[in-house]
Image 1: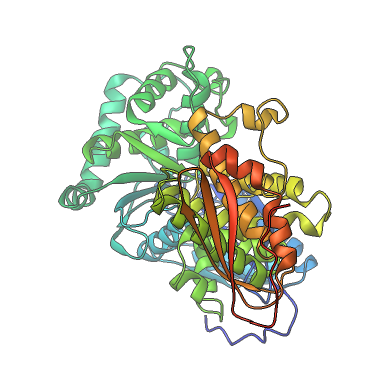
Image 2: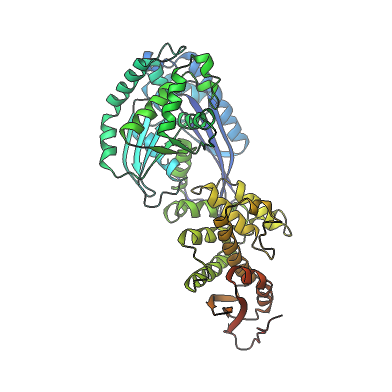
Length: 536
């Protein structure tokens, strides 16, 4: 599909993406703004079981097609109601293998007004890679991606920039249940489970060999099956231990498999964390993941909630004038910038604050005023970009609104600890410094994280004061440590008295953080402006 250039002076455009899968149909509806930011209007999912019995009869059932057409029509109506200019729709395993797929596609065209593209297994794998990799911070790490669908399982090996291997296996939760566990109402014996694994290994042998050739740094699992297995592990295997559903350990997966196999279907539906609508096919899905993790030597996988529909949006974005967001930015910076732009931030001021905050951080590190490293520096950069995004809600309480927005935004590529640090640094970028007695959210942090927040919020506070007028008068800044004082050297062009007054208000914070008194030394590139550097 060819994209034409979009005039940046036009308003936002609405785009819909529908993924017709073997088990469920998903809609992603996005508003893309002229500045490259975007907002998810809705993300919908309906289970339709399009592939029910299809892998035995090789035909889509009439009632399954009827359910799918109905859901697609409702999703299309929803997208058009919101003003979608175009709805890109793809169909995967069940549709591409069905002998009567043309009948199904004609019905979708006639009854839902959708021109559906049936994608190959390799294209499905590529879109999955785009969707998942665009939401995780991989950097130079090489990952194994596993996406378990109803009819197929996609295997990808890749890093942040590119994939090295794509494969689509004819292994899916519905497919294997239909073929090998047709009587899925009772418990599954160990013998049946071994036969299931043998079938999986036969079909995955080349993918397993390929994975063994690579030095893999981590595994990533996506799809409803993987998400649900992680939820079961987090809730059903408590044993006094707090578990996260963001990571699934292979040892925990094996316990989940034993639990699920031991129960008849009706009891299986009541297992803590399980999706009851997935209970009849979950064992086959678990067997795929269990076998692949074992043979590919993955002790755990990170669980991603992203998938093919997100890959469709990323693929679309790569064909627009905003493709630079994908090509030149990391996942983390792209996610932060999109949130900032969606909040209508003052971009020039924010970028200026970033530069000043990093100069303060770097010079303080050189002077051994703190022992923080590149990881904390990166978080400071992003906190500085986001530091006043709450201003569109309230100027006087913007720091509190900023804290809430950062804490609750779906920032891609970050873990919860990193999001907390950025939110806290932005929360305390004004005059009030963080205190354990007055701020319970700060008190709840570990001692190390509190130290990080103190330093980052101080760097951000000084930088914000140094552009108090939003005029960009301060060009450079650096700290120099002495025995009993620390001097802030400021290079400015123009009358920056307002900025200096703001900096002096942070003297107590500097003294607490660096155990030294703050002094100012100013070099004014505009000789006609007199600068008062005296303490007040």
